[in-house]
Structures are given as structure tokens and as C-alpha cells.
Length: 267
Image (tube, rainbow, N blue to C red; front, side, top):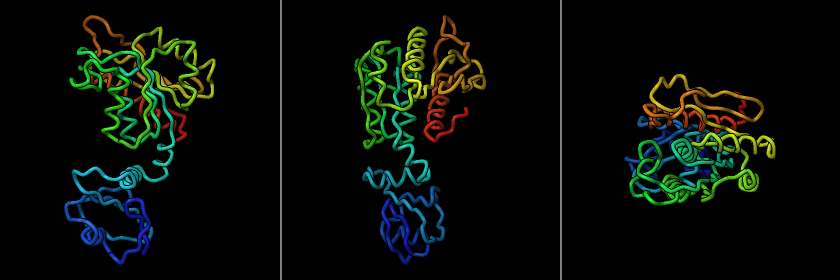
């Protein structure tokens, strides 16, 4: 019978997953069949999609693509791989959003920030001590290459202005606003809605402190504009920005971006 093995069509007489694994690989490999990772043997059928990956070894591009497609299903993975997303602001929201999108397999990520990594960032932003002093755009591109070296990243060390927004964002279909400054948030929102109305914009507002994470929601404000957060909790003395709640909001934004990639326009 014919099956897909690590992204390639092969003929096999093997009747089960483990029979195939043991014939071509070794028993300690990771096995995924039709999107389901399993440690149990199972029968093979015509047309099955199988990924068999050695543990602890960087797979080839074809093997990694096959594994991602197997976990996400091919139709989802194909759409995600073709997506082009800009993340504007690479702080607590943006750095976590970018890493989530990279792990999801988004094919092109434009990462924009003018700042460097500082010690005060480490309580909630997706950076490490080794990144201190680096531009955030460079540090994040470096991390993403370590997660998936086959994703195309474009790090831009610049401050987005009303005048530069359209040029910087013209090559992306979905724009993620992840600024800390309310004035910058308003500027980017107005620039996208007025000059790039065809683009989808996902914003964040209200994720400070340690109030209930259930208050953080995703809302559609109007066509092509989505807001994630509780829209009320601001960073202030005694109510700082902390990793758990910031990460919950970042997850909302990343998930809404994924839904938009899949052409789902409802939160």
C-alpha cells in the first residue's frame, strides 16, 4: 500500500506502525500517525500520513514539515505556513506572541521593536539573561531560529511612526499590536484602519496584575479589528505587569491570529 512517510509517498508491505518503524528506523523513535502521537502500535491503512522522528536529533526540513503537518493536519499546516504576520512591539505581549506563532509554524514573521533587552524585562518577556543588551528584534529572531530554522523571520529595529507604518507593514496580511504605550497603540490602530483597511489587526489592552485570568477575553470591535484583554487593568504601583496574566493575553492574541489565518472571523 501507499502511505505518506515523513512527507514522501512510499510503498510498504508493513501492516502496523511499529512494524514500519522497526524496519526503517529504531524502536526509540517518536511515532505520529494521522496527527496522533502514540506509544502504542496501530494498524496502517492506505493513504495514512506517518511521521517517524529520531529523538534528540534535528530533523531535516522535509521531516519537520511532515511532523508539523501531522500534528496540525495538512490543511491547517498549509494555511499557517503561507501566513505573513507582523508583530509590532516585542515586549511581554509581542515576544510571547511571536514564539507561539513560530511554534505554530507561521511561515513569515516580521518582528518590529526599537528597544534592547533589559533586566527588568525578564519577569514577563520571552528573553534570557544571554540576550541582555541585544536589540529585541535580533534576540527574538535568534530564538525563533532555534525553535524552527525553516521559518522566515524579518527583524526590524525601528520605532513605528504614523508616517512609516504603511511601508513597514505592507508585506503582511495580519498585524499584531503589542505596544506598552497607549499613545503608540492608538497611533498604530488609526494608521492601519485608515490606510490599510484590508489588513486584519489584533490588539491587546488590559492584562496587568493578578486579577482573574477569566476576565481576559477576545472581542471583535468591528470589521478587521480585534481586542484581547480585560480593557481595564492598567500597570500602576501595586499592580504591575506579571508573567501569568500577560501570557494569558498573549495567548488570546496568538489564538485570534491563528483563527484569522484559518479564515475564522469570530473570536
